Image (cartoon, rainbow, N blue to C red; front, side, top):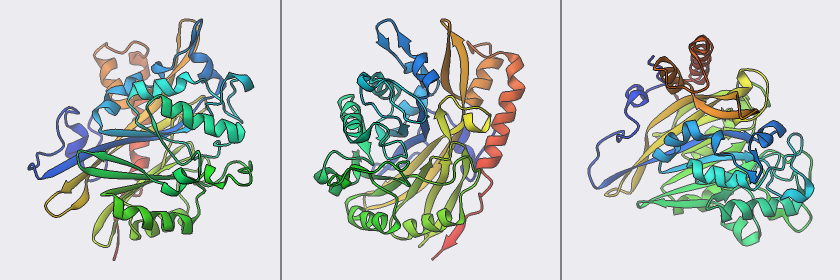
Length: 372
C-alpha cells in the first residue's frame, strides 16, 4: 500500500535507514521527529505496574526505530511527575510514575514539551519536580521553567552537527489553575505578542525555529481561522514550523509559502497514547521534518517532510490491559507477513480504513498558501 502525503511522494516509501537526499559535504540535512499528546490515564499507568515498580517501554516500542532514526525527537507529555506522595492519577489531574521519563528516553525522545493545560495538575512544586525528573533522565524540556533565568532564555537550542535548532513551547491554558504570584516564569502561555517577542529574541541564535503550540478546540477535526492566521503571523516573523497538540484528534497540516520560504504547520498531531474511546481519539501521527543547511550561504530550508499515521492499540498481556503506539502501515505489513504478535488478519480491514481516513484527513488542507 503506497499512501503518500503531499509533495514528498518518494520520501514516504524510502528506506528509513537511507538518507532522504545525497548532499555535498558543505550541506547538512537534519532529521527531526515529533508526535502527539501522551495521556497517562489510570489504565495506562496500571499497564506498567510491576512488583518492583513501573515500566513503560512497551508504550513506544513499535515506533522506537522511527524515533531513533531521527536526529532529535519531541513529544508533549500531559502529566505531572510529582512523585507517589499525592498518588498516581489519570484524568482530570494527571500524575504519573517517574519511570515514565526513563521510558521516553529509552524510546528515542530527546525533548519533552511540558507546556499544556495539565502543567499545573500537581501545582507549582509538581511542575518543578516534573522538570527535574525529566532532566535527570537525560531529556530536554521546553515550555515550563524552574526560574526566571531559564524562562528568559526561553528557547531550547540543540546544535546538531553545526545546525542549531530552536524550540519554543506554549499552552493556551492551565485549566484555570493559576501560577503562584512571583513565579510567573513557570509556564509559557500562548499570547501572540509574547510569542513574537520570543521569536525576535531567538531567531538570530538559530538556523531553524520550531514552535510547539498546545492550542485549538478539543476534539475538533480542523483548526480555527484564528489559528491559521496566527500560524501565518508567526511564520512571517521568523518561525519555520509549528507542531500542534491538545485537540486529541488529528488535524491537517499546511505548507505556507511566506516571504519566498516554505513553512510547515500541523495543527494537531492527535494522541500518541492514552485511554480514550473512539478511532479518532486513538489516531495520531509521527511528523518527520528534514531541514537542509547550506554552510556556504548559511541558509537553511525545509527540504522534505514525512507523515506516518499511528494508532494507539490496546491489547491484553500478562493479565493486564496494555497500550502501544503502532505505525499503521508497518503493522499492516507485519500482519500480512505473520510477524505481528497481537493483531491478526481479521484486524486488517479496520487498520486499512484508519490509515485511509487519517491520510486523507491529514492531507485535506494540502493546498499551499503563498504570502509575500
